[in-house]
Image 1 (tube, rainbow, N blue to C red):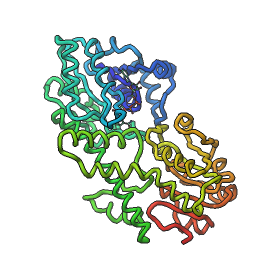
Image 2 (tube, rainbow, N blue to C red):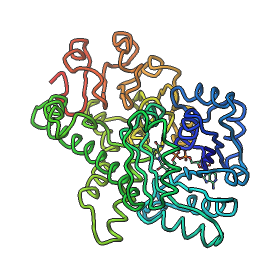
Image 3 (spheres, helix red, strand yellow):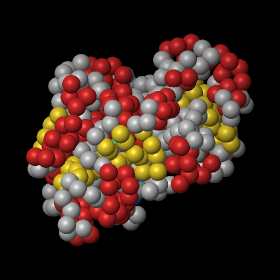
Image 4 (cartoon, rainbow, N blue to C red):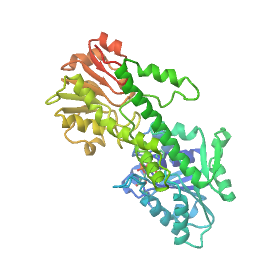
Length: 438
Ligand SMILES: NC(=O)c1ccc[n+]([C@@H]2O[C@H](COP(=O)([O-])OP(=O)(O)OC[C@H]3O[C@@H](n4cnc5c(N)ncnc54)[C@H](O)[C@@H]3O)[C@@H](O)[C@H]2O)c1
C-alpha cells in the first residue's frame, strides 16, 4: 500500500512511522519546512519514546520519507490520511477546521485514480461530509471515498498505543474503501485488534464521546478528592475502592491538578458546541469543562495555604511543566495557569522539567529554569510537583530538604505518602488527603 500522511505532528508522524513499520510505503507531508528538513536529517521534532529508532529504521528501509510537496505522494497513494491540527477556534471554542479543509482542497487537486481519503484528525460530526463536498467541488471527476478513522493514541505511549490499540474505529459506506482500510490495518487485525466498522458520523462522534467520558472520569475523582480533604477521607483509597468494581474500572481515577494537553480541553469544548448547535446539550460535559477550567489556577491556593497565606517574595520551585510525563507537549498544561497564579500572588517561580523546558520560554514569562530538581529546590520556600515524571518519584528527599529554605512540599500528583513525608519533617500537602502535620 502507498500512503500519504498529510500533517506530520504528534499523530501524523507516529501513525505514518507505524504504518511504514507495518510494511507500507509512507510519505509524511508537512507545510512546516523546518520540521521536514529536521526529519530528513534524522532529527525528531517531538519527544516521544522510541520514535527516533522507528523513524530511522523505516527511513533506512526505504519505506518512510518526508516532503513539503503534497502533490506527488497524493497522486501515487492508495490512501491519503489527513492528520492536521484541529485547535479550538478563537472566540467560540468550536473546532477550527481551516487546516482540514485547506488540506482537502490541496489533496483534491492532486488525486489520481481511486483513492481513499481518511480523516484521522479529531473532527466534529459532519466534517467528513464537508471534506467530501470540498473534494468533489474542487475536482468533480475524481473517484474518491472519504473515510473517518479517529486516532486514540496517547502522547508518551503513542507507539505502543498505535500498535496495540483497544480498537480501530473506521467510519465508511464504500466497500472498496473498506478493502483498502482492512489492508492498511491488516497487521493489527492479525494481532486481533477489533476493527469497528460504522457510519462516518458515528465514527466522528465516538472519538469525542470517548475523550469526554475520560475527562469526566478525571473530573469526577478530582471533585471527590476535594470532598475527601474536607471530611478526612483518603482519595487514593476511595479511587481503589471504586476502581476495583469492573463496571467502573481503575483507569483515569487519578486525582490531580485538572486535565490538560492537546486533546481533552479542546475536544470537550468542541463536543459541547456541537451539542448546543443540535439542541442536544451535554450538560455533564459542560460542567466537566467548567470545573476543570477553574481547578488549575485554584491549585495555587494550596501553595498559599501551606505557606501561611502570603507568597510575596517567596520562591516556589515547580517540578514538571508538560501536561503529563514522557512528552514535551505544553499545550493547555496545568503548569501554565498555576504558575501565572503563583506569580499573581507575588511569588518568584523557578521550574525544572526533563524535556519540556525547550518550548517553555514562549509559554512562561518571568520564570527561571533550573537544570535539575535539586538545583530547582535550592533555597525555595515550597516545592510543587506538577507532572509525575519518573525521576520525581524517587527524589533524594533528605537532599531536597537540605537545600530548601523550608521543607514544604505540595504534591499535585500524590507521588509520595503523607506519613513518610511527615516522618522526614516535611510540611506536605497533596490531593484528596489530609495535609501533614495536621
Ligand atoms: N496529540 C495527540 O495526542 C492526539 C491524539 C489523538 C488525536 N489527535 C488529533 O490529531 C490531530 C493532529 O494533532 P497533533 O497533535 O498531531 O497536531 P500537531 O499540531 O502536532 O500537528 C499538525 C501538523 O499538521 C501540519 N499541517 C497543517 N496544515 C497542513 C497542510 N495543509 N498540509 C500539510 N501539513 C499541514 C502542521 O504544520 C503540523 O505539523 C488533531 O485533530 C488532534 O485532535 C491528537
